[in-house]
Image 1 (cartoon, helix red, strand yellow):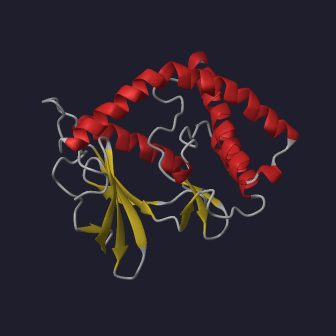
Image 2 (cartoon, helix red, strand yellow):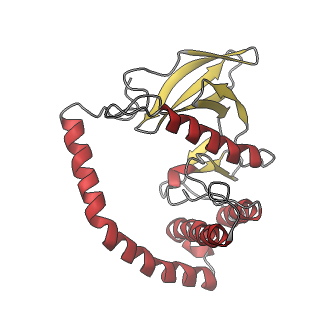
Length: 246
């Protein structure tokens, strides 16, 4: 079930005459594997490689190439923003290396400085002005509280723009819905971590959206229950290795 099957990430990389050594594998799931690397000069970087292994006899490397090219498109479009890691180089047909963003994932166990969420909302608006939606803001681990106290975004695997289906009425309509979802998820985190900074309008947005979220969860609950049960069985039988395993 792992993206690289029984293969592991390369122990060393050479990009633009800079050698990088694998520090540890961070996550290895069905679609991709990520690992932390370090250069001789102490610089840190992250390698992400998309799927290369077949699944049930079907070739799947094309999905790894597609997702890699797609995610790189977003990184390149945001390359001038200090809140998004810079791409360092490509690795094979399904992988790329980007800078390591110094910081920690959002957490209720970690103090969030004043104004952090306002800056995060402005960052989301900047993405929206550039014609894309982040989409994955519901996961706090994708939003980093940087050592500079600024928000940083990583993992654009499921981000969205109008490229796939063309710039038309339906694509723009769907993109606007994703824009609203981005802001809602940021406000959801803000409500949990800095409720003292919530405005009346922000409380209203969260309450209205929560009703729709509850309906969505009710409709999708059977699927996710089946998915959790299946993954639990596969792990118990050894067919699905734990994340980060080597």
